[in-house]
Amino acid sequence: MESIKTVNDLRTILAEEITKIRNGETTAANVNAIVNATGKILTTVKMEIEYNKLLGLTPQIDFIQSEKVKKLEIRKASQRAADERLPRVAG
Image (tube, rainbow, N blue to C red):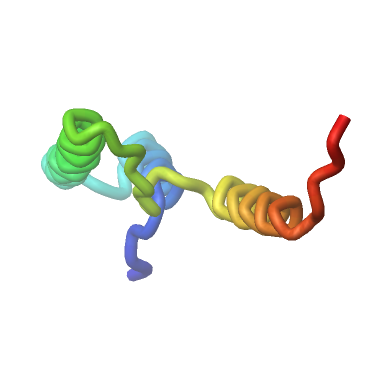
């Protein structure tokens, strides 16, 4: 079993469980256990967001950031660094 690293992984698992219950391949008790654990995971993410908000910080939570977003942030940071190295032209 693969580990759950992102919210998209969690969504995939939940969708798979819905398919399994529709096909009679699992029980409602198993699906309820997964849904319960999912709720607890998301509650911890929400707590982290709220805590950072109280501190005036923007949290970097890998679990809810897609690889696309991470790559975009890296690209933006690289561009900012390059811009800072350029001399300023007085206008």
